[in-house]
Length: 231
Image (cartoon, rainbow, N blue to C red; front, side, top):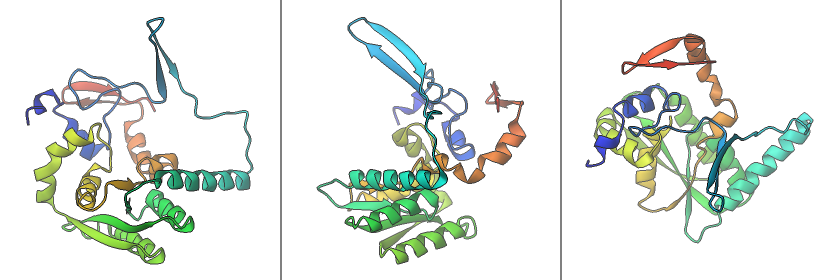
């Protein structure tokens, strides 16, 4: 496409290998990202820009386990209810993992009008995501969702990988199945419940641990440019 010249040559490989762009890189040539949890404030009157680290954790608040679980359930339910305030039908992207399963449970318990779910699977790798596929089917059956299965092949990925990088922006690990889910879903639905980011809140299943062990205090060469990992 005419936009491709502006994209980094490693955007597709980073998406598939890491699930993100390392360090402060982005998919765009010459554009860097803020460090994690950074807030930039613009004062148009004083014409000043300030940047500060956002603290997500308030050490002054103490929770007992039961209090925290109750608050977490209520916050998840409230978020799902707010997201379903729509004048058009809402569908669910269901992976069978922790995040989308929690959302499916919250939507069902709140009696929200979410009746359709979409799940993608890799047809040529039946054992790769067998557990997730079985989980998605079980969740859909338990909460009475109409489940549509979307088959992904290697050729489909090859044909769409550049479009994914351009249209989805900053790469993230779910871009491959999500791309095909959103494409199929958009034929009938324009609003989607998705658990993107939920894995990270709950530790991302520990998938990062073996990578962290291998990269601890090491520097890799990534397209001839050094990347240091401080873990």
